[in-house]
Length: 129
Image (cartoon, rainbow, N blue to C red; front, top):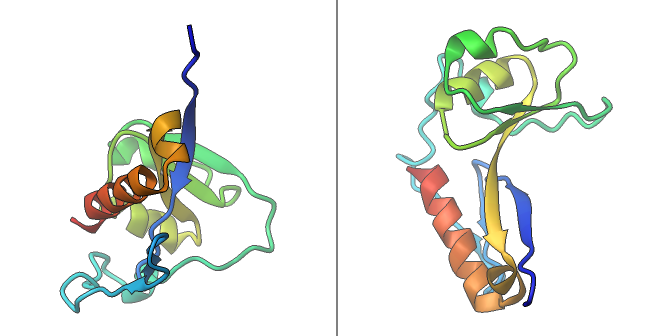
């Protein structure tokens, strides 16, 4: 029996553009899609600080009281697992911490360019909404 391997990819969507793997073109965002949900618009900017050693936290609770327990001075990246919440993004970015989501993809999808692109588009649409 053939084993099926599942790969976990950290799937990051940058607010300004995403690259289409099959066409090599940028996916443009409308002005409405770029609306910042944060109280401070700078918190919607992409975190570019790479000077610190990477320290990840995996957040499985979509609960603000849980997030307030994080040691924001040590973290560089929060991985949302099983949910997407713009409030967490705003809070993390206020502390100069990246936020990414975790996406699961099976081997058949991972190794087939057409299926992989469809999966990427699906993940993009989840984050976009």
